[in-house]
Image 1: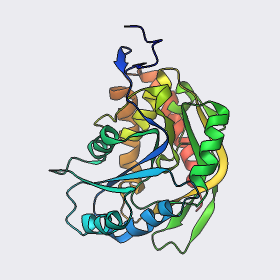
Image 2 (image 1 turned 120 degrees about the vertical axis):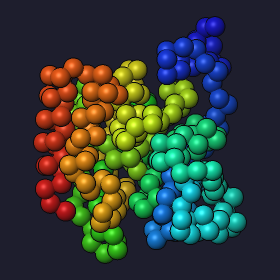
Image 3 (image 1 turned 135 degrees about the horizontal axis):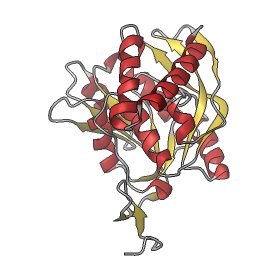
Length: 272
């Protein structure tokens, strides 16, 4: 097979694979959801309020014991762009994202966690920027908000550009700001690892992709007490495991990357 053929793309192993017939203008929004009922309605409403209306939102209920599925079901019944997917057993966010990725029809893949929010022009502004930069992956600035949404933090700026080497030591990409062009990546999926999102961005950039940052505040990252991302000691261990076990880096390169990652994280989170 010749990967110059417009129906083919380079797969994760560097092999030619059949390219999916993506809908060119459609943004497929990937949202894993577990115990998400308290915040999910507000998250969905932030998507419905987008000035760019050509989207599908695939929300994967990972066997939540609360009313997550019922919340999504009410929105899906009134808006065909909202789709509820239900996992047969709890498998974690990577499997939930992969379920949605397998069913996504859009050229564009956006990620939005179940407790985060988008500002109304997020998709419009980022799509225009992404096309202009001819990028593989883009991400935006954002602000943190408290669990109740009443406290809004300072703007978190992002790097203008990241390649694989720079991303190894950087905390600049927030998952709920990411937009990916699948005509450049071909099919991709999350690895079953703790930081599946970070590992995915690394894989895409390792293939030679370009990641660019839009310095516009377009997302609200909700800080929920007791969430996994707030456990900094555990997070640090998992970042180290990503370097050593997922990326296969040597000890010295892992140490260099981790030192940069930790220092940038401290600078980013030293105040709300």
